[in-house]
Image (cartoon, rainbow, N blue to C red; front, side, top):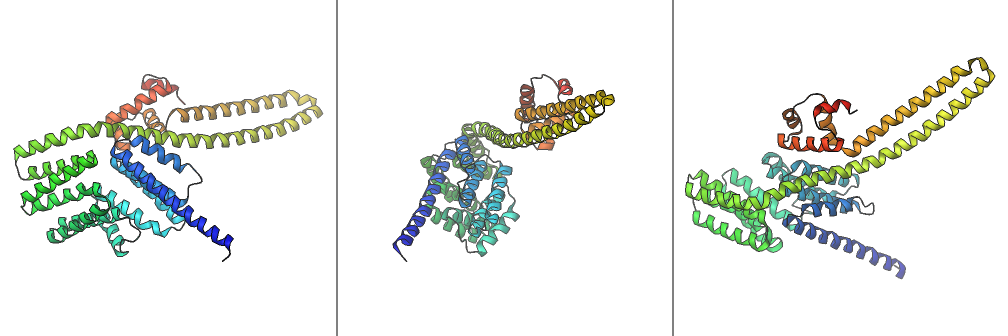
Length: 398
């Protein structure tokens, strides 16, 4: 190998390593944003990177996974699965088989969170059959924990305890701030084994860890575990104690969570509409130029024929004016459609059509699987965008 070839090889290796460090740094940044409830910053950072055509397919997979994890914090599992599906598509299109286990692990976490344990278990068995290859230590620890919980559900407490122990050891080495997750599972286990003292020990360890890492959601999770156990045990005093704890922590977390969720959804839709609008403008411009060209050709032959047959001159002139008006009307109709698309997002456009069809707020809510309050919020936004006040005004909207 000559010196030039060797230099190229070294540069290539360094570039790959630098890119890996960049993704690692990005993951840490998003993790910090999410822990501090700064989901808007996470979304803006990641979406801007996705729009960059210079980003490699492997990095796009990681960015989509980070987006899914951000939405997971907000319990928006529809968006979680959307971004994981995007990651999966990129992996298949670029034949990046090494990414499959990582993406599958994230799907398993999502199904586990939504208590679809059968789907989660099926994916975890696939990952286990591949010997947890290409998984980060953090993801491997969480898969082990979920496998332990499956054993716990099957009342195989000894196996569950072993899996939880292995999980805790991995987390202590690689992701110490995630320990409250496995501590919560160990609390459930020891309560089931009637060892309340040990359960309380893990509760206090978990709370201390969550406070040290400043992760509020883990404190909420541990309080919820304790609250649910004492409900099962019919201990009203302790139920009240942990309910108050749970509610007070949730007040710090949930309002911000819900508000950020609305902002994230709005911003995401706005970005999608903006991209679609740019595409639509290009298509309309080309169509308009073609229409003008066709019109010029038609006018040329009509005028030429009219000069040869002066008797029918008025007829042809009328036809020309008629075609011009049709084109103008057609363009005006397109412009109205574009204007409406700029003012409203896809969901609001669908709601608008349902409102025109006489659907009630409740029926619209059922269609989109949202509450009537959320429907009213969207309707208010529609009214403001269209400068109308009531549904009666909708008859004037094309």
